[in-house]
Structure formats: structure tokens, C-alpha cells
Amino acid sequence: MNSTRAILAGFIATAAVTTLWLVEPYLGLPALAVGSMLSSFLAVATAYLPIWPAVGWTLHVVVGIGLALTYARWAADLLPGSPLARGLAFGFAVFVVAQLTFMPLVGAGFFSRGDLPLVVGSLLGHLVYGGLVGFIYGWRATPKHVG
Image (cartoon, rainbow, N blue to C red; front, top):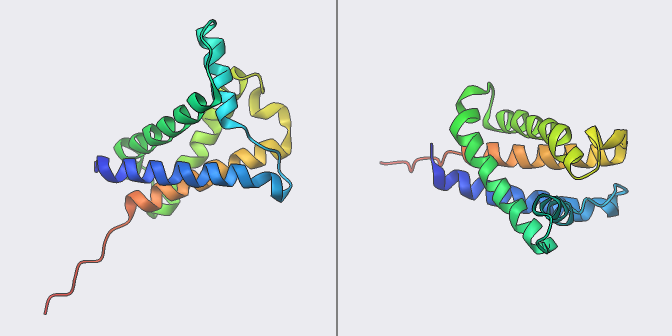
């Protein structure tokens, strides 16, 4: 496992999906306030500590990097296909787990209570994230031609 490459892939993919989620309202999809959702979850979990959206956004980046490390450790060699295909499969798996665990925890229900625009926006974001993690982590530099 190349931890440095996994961390870089997680950071870049998280930045890209965050940007996508900020742009999605301009594409007709609902806004996904990930930082606010995470800070709300933390506020519920800690009950009495004031948690701000910046803490939620920080957690979002940390989770993105952690998931990329998870991908590098277990999924990169187990999933079939190209690095991009493996990343897309991983991103889909993260989407399903998020919809079954995280969304109910923040009060959005399983699969965002069937709100199709929210589900599509989340799926799109997780596929972009996973695809980028797979592509960046699996990218191999072409060796220099000697001769």
C-alpha cells in the first residue's frame, strides 16, 4: 500500500466532490450541506458541545482521506477491472453505506427518504470521489525511456 498516494488521492477526490456538491444546486440538484450535516451529527453525538460547520467540513476531509486509505489497503487489489472501474465500484459501495447509516443518523432517513434529487446528487458525488481515488491511486507514471 502506498499511503502517501492514498492520502493525496483522498484529499484531491474529497476536494473535487466537495466542489461538485457546491455546484450541484446550479445544475438543478439540491444543495448538500455536508459540513452542516456532519456538525449536526457531532452535536447530537456530543450533546453539549458547540460544534460549528467548519468542524464538520474538517471531518468531511478526514473521512475522505480515511476512505482512500481503506480503498488502498483493501479494495484496490480485491476489486476487478481498471483502477477507474475499481474506484467507481468503491464509490458506489461508500454511497450505499452512507445512505444506510449516515443519512439516517443525521435525520435524512434511509436513501434520503426516497428524495430522488438528493439520492442522485449523493450518488454522483460518491462516484466522482471513488473514480478519482481509484484513478489517482492506480495511476502509474510511465518510466522514462532509456536509450
